Length: 134
Image 1 (cartoon, rainbow, N blue to C red):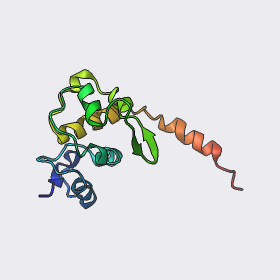
Image 2: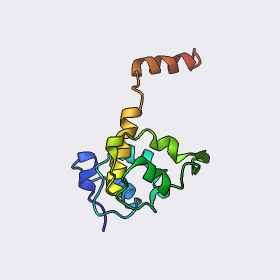
Image 3: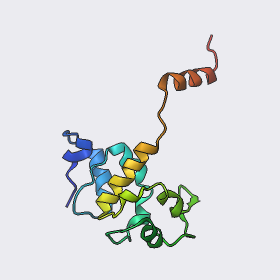
Image 4: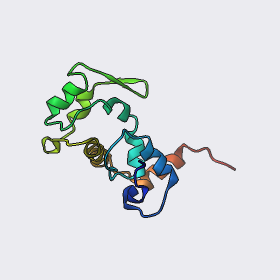
């Protein structure tokens, strides 16, 4: 059964590209309420999360389900230790009761840990790197 794209980031407009993203997620009972941009960022992790069993009661149990403290997973051809990612999950994020709940919590972590962008400063920096056109 396809996910309801009308909940896409609480945007009522139908969006076929977002529906495709949702259809690529592991099978879930409910659609996670995650905007398209954050879902796009998380999709590299999702193949590594498909075998999880829920609820996940603690960070330690999460680490164990991902292969233990010494495990690594490949993300964009880079070996990454799941324990390094999980350490950013506050204790109150547990238990994680479902895949939907995990995706929503990971999206929140992406949001709160992303540095704010000073757009005028960044545009100025980019302008300084461009060659003068006479």
